[in-house]
Image 1 (cartoon, one colour):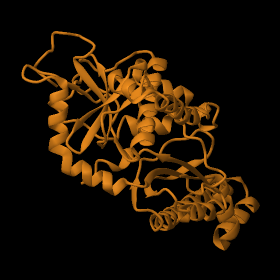
Image 2: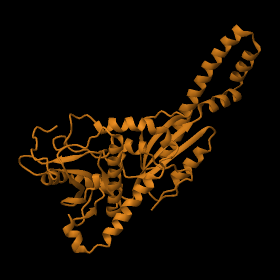
Image 3: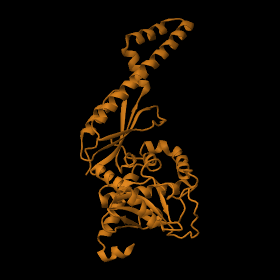
Image 4: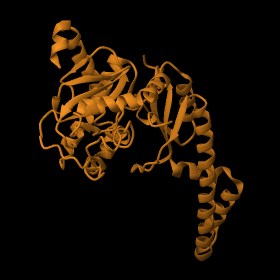
Length: 92
Length: 266
């Protein structure tokens, strides 16, 4: 159910996603989580990659990944829902 | 950091958690996880976590493309879970629950979910039917500065005077004009920020001010917001359309996002 989005709704970029997925979202209790001295290695790696790509990303050259990301679950889920219930129960 | 080092680097020693949702029966979401791992649910009471089995170590890579694929996979699963469960609480990237000497990863996860059951249930209720939207407002600082000089009698006079005077004096006047213009631009920026923020805030349920980011195309970011809003609402779109029509202003709008920015409050 999409709202009435303005025409100039820009495609989300990897930068937008990284801002969310690396710094936000739920965090686990410290004693439960596997970490490496709290150093965000993935964050550093991706920031390096992203710094170089930011100009490209801002102008939407990689603009379709968001659409692809959202489309993929639907395809997978359609495939899943065509399975028999018995299959689903044993698949895990 | 954990002091217990699981000695079995098995593929099932730990659980990578994508998000939390209201529990239905056990669900399988298919091989859509990081490294195409099969994604499924672990239930505790009324809530569940969407997970895949992994080794007891975080996902790390020196190769940006690999790290990028993992992040995209994380988002892919979170979006799929939204399709299945309606409302979810997304985890940050790389949240991995380990087992220990007493309990395996599943038990530890279930313990955590049980602890958080009330809090997560309240959050899920709060977020039902809503989405996160990112709003970034930019301006063409140069354009705004020129318009300000043009319209302000004092500034315009300073500029005209500087053009008439001989070199040395002109330079001093130009300096004075630059300083005065900069102050006028700053004042204008503050007015815009306050005005836009107020108008946007009235259309959304919750709002967070985010850090400004550098751009390299001559535009300057004035405002960076994350907003929580009913998915069917059109009020925000209307306000953003008006703001976009302001001279020198451009708006960038993304969403709906899974509510990453709104799961750590309260």
